[in-house]
Image 1 (cartoon, rainbow, N blue to C red):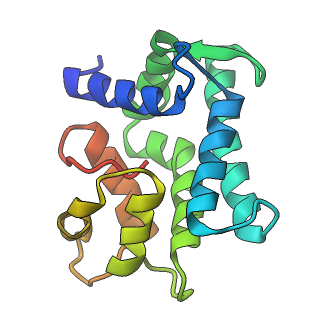
Image 2 (spheres, one colour):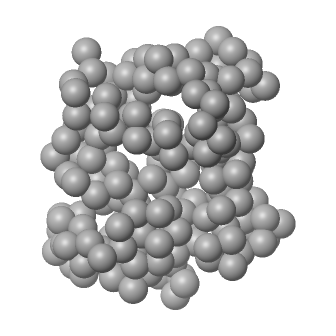
Length: 176
């Protein structure tokens, strides 16, 4: 059962993908978001990092579309999207987030990780917030709440957990 917080956050996510406001999302919406994020980093779609992000986003779409039974060229309304998200991500807890969202989170983290240390620094996180359209004025506060081990860096594990905590209503900062 989806809580009102979860439903509101799923609605917000759905509306971010539904840029044309037609009440549905499709493969092109996922592809356009990947392109927008790449552009915000000045990264080419044909670079290794660009291909990884595009593949992660389109892989997420293909998984969602397949679970909804619409095929890769179909479209989802909010109800269908929320049902798949509930069953395949929210109800499955960390396992659902790991399977469905981890590849995308890892690909964005790889874009942000400009020094190649496998971690996201506060400055790199600021770029993440800008790239995904989140309120970057809250980046420092969000970073502190996401950095659960207190090492001053964010790991992919902490980022996946933060997305999980956001959708469960425990964290107020959207990372995707």
